Image (tube, rainbow, N blue to C red):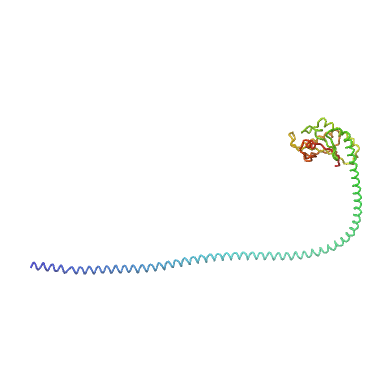
Length: 321
């Protein structure tokens, strides 16, 4: 009995395992089904979400495009508003210009009327002037005859003046010849003095030490002789003859090493010294003139000591003012 009961107990235990297996299989299938449903749901949900996202992206692109179009339209509207404002200003300016032109036209019309009145007045004046011109023409003819008479008188006076000037020049030439003739007789034996054309030429060494503007004793003697001769001739020259003794100082082109900055000062100072000496001897200053030429009027263009000596000189010329 005991052995039978153990066998029955084992048999009952063996019969319970298939039930458990079936239950577990069923549960596993349910879980797999649930998972499959969940996966499919997730897949469908993902597809739906992707479609919605694409729709949203499309909508955002359309919104951005519409915003851009709106901005462009707003800019276009602003441009149109500015154009309208500009046109309004131009219209106002045109109206002002039109008003100004209208005023100018009115003013020009008034000026035209005034000019017409002035033209009428000028025509009247022109008629009066024509009458006066006729009278002036008659008087002018008389004046022309008088002018011709005056021209003849002027020509006669000119001829007389030329004759008088020629006489003055002839007198001056005669006195110049007499003056130079007397000087030639007095100074003919003096070395370093010569006559060149219409002037007496004294070599500087005859009158001045080298590089100095102070007369040497021999120079003072020669200038006194010249002054006496000039006074004798001047007494014979009529007051109406405008004569003058020009004293010209000349130097050579060698550089100087004295108190004078250049040959300009040296030549001028020597001429002035001679003039002052003549004034001291009684020559009227109104008949004297001093001029310095430095080394720019040479007699000899050579470079020898003899050429330089010839160019260092004092010239006396009796001429008219």
